[in-house]
Every structure is written in C-alpha cells, then in structure tokens.
Amino acid sequence: MFHRHGTLALAVISVCLGLAESRPAEAAGRVELVLTTDRHAPLTAQQTWARELGAAGIRNVRLRSAHAGDRVGIETRGTKESPLYVVTGTLDSRGEVILPDGRYRQGEAKRIAHWLDELARLGPPESREPVVAFGLARSEMMAVRDDLATPIDFSTKGLPREEAARKILDGLRLPVELDPKLLPRDEDDRVADELRGLSRGTGLACVLRPLGLVLVPRSTPAKGPGYRIAPARGEKEVWPIGWKPEKPGPKLVPKMIDFFWLELPGVQASRALDAIGERLQIPVLIDHHALAHHGIDLEKAIVTVPRTRMTYASALDRVLFQAKVKSEL
Image 1 (tube, helix red, strand yellow):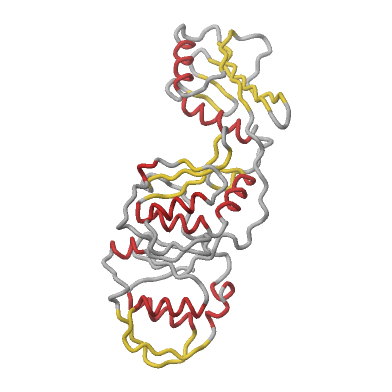
Image 2: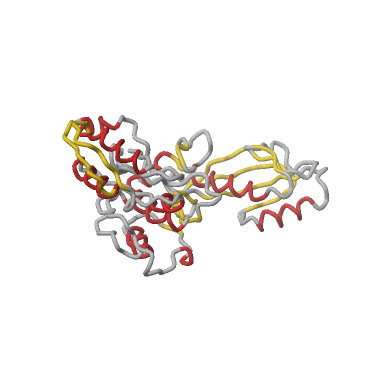
C-alpha cells in the first residue's frame, strides 16, 4: 500500500486474497413521506417545506392535517422483493420536521433526502445489514470487493493512462460514474508499471493517482452498489492502492526470510528492486507521483552492498535505505 509522502510500494497483495463469496444486494425499496401538520404550525411552513423538499429531489411527499392516533414512525408495506416504506413525520408548532431519526429545521431538506435514500436502500434501521465501509451494507461491500478483485488481464506498461484506466473500468460489472473531462487523452502520459495480474481495484487506484483522482465505492437506491471516479481532494474514504495485510510479511511471503548471497557494486536502485521483486515473485509498484514530488529518481539513485549473506527482507531494507525511500507490503 502507498503512503502519500514519498513512499515506495514494494508489493500490493491483491484484494482477491481471502475474500468471501459475495451475494448481490437486495433491490432498493420505495419511500413515501407523510408529514402531518400541527394546527399551531406557522402558516407558511407547509409551503416552505414543500418547496425545499421538492428542491432536494424528494418527490413522493404528502402534507396533511394531523389526525388522532398519528405517530412518527416507519411502516413497511409491499413485498420483500419490492418494499414500500411509509414514513410518517410531523411538522410541529415551531415549523420544524420531526422524523423517526430526529428533528430537522428549514434549510436541512438535503439531510432528509439523504436519510430517505438510505432508508430506501437499506431498509429500516432495525432490519438492515450493518454498514461496514464506504457507507455500504455488508452484502454491497462484498459485491464491490468481488468485482474489484477481478485481475487485470492485459499489459498496462506503456499504455496511455486514459486508455489503461478505461480498459480496467470496462472489466468491472458494477456501474461507474465518470465525468469524461476527468480522463483526457494524453499520449505523453503513459503508465510506467506492469499491472497485469493485479486486482482491478488496486490497478485502477494506481493508474488514477498521478491524475489526482480516486475510486470511491458507493451505493444509490436506483442502481445499488457501484463506483464514482472523483478528484482526490475532499474525499475522505477511497479505495486504496493496497490493503494493509493482517498477517506479517514472512507469513504472506515466506521467502522474505530466506538467506542468500548479495553483492551490489553500485547499481541503480530501480534495477535492484526489480531483481528482488523477481526473486520473491511479488510485484513491485513504484509511487512515481510521490517520488517526483520529493525529487527522488530511482534510475539515478545508486546502491552499493558488499558481498554479504542476508535475508531478502534485509536486502530490501538496505536498498530502500540507500535510495531514501520506504515500502509497505
């Protein structure tokens, strides 16, 4: 996995390791919002809320006078395959809306829209799956992980970055939201690494990073789980270039603690790292973007190691230290 600041990614273990079998997320339901109006509510409150809810994209709304026995809550109707969630709320004497999840003031209609979308997608809180990451339910996250674990089946080294990104995206099953302007064609911007065999999630994150873009898993009531390609700035939770492993390095790559004779009489750091990666049979991914930012060129960095018997892990540490970079497995 890459750090943001001048870090070399030694190897990214594909997210297909240890994945449970995924199952498709259930179809999203429909939501109807019923707001009962307190007789002491401000005269303009209904009109104001009707306008704000409409502007927030909430269409299925009814406002009516309060009846005896009205209760704030959620009633599930329809079928399991096509549920209808009828949400009853109150427009109170202060002109505020009270829903099952809390109180909303005027100007907060978008928050209501978000909550209703979540209800349509996940169902009532007491019956929904736990949210595990990216705002996704467990089954949605499994579908995303299964999709992104698909290996890249073509050579990426030397491809125009835009072409490589689109070919990786074409191999995904879940829908992707992408503004074409974010991936302009540039024949001079080419992928420097060979990503064939890595998971599409890892490879895509690697290809997008130099463009300042990230892959964001998400889910919508209309389409279910999918992805959005977005500028990195402002995004708090994004698909990483690699996931931090739960096991230590030697457990994942036992050969790291094997001994061998090493002698490097002044060679390029890039060549030394490629050779070690080849011996260990793991991919070596370079964070070219971060290295360029910090003025580090592995082609020009020269490493020297006298003939010594050491483990591959120690050899890697020696090379990285002299090149002034570090790695993560």
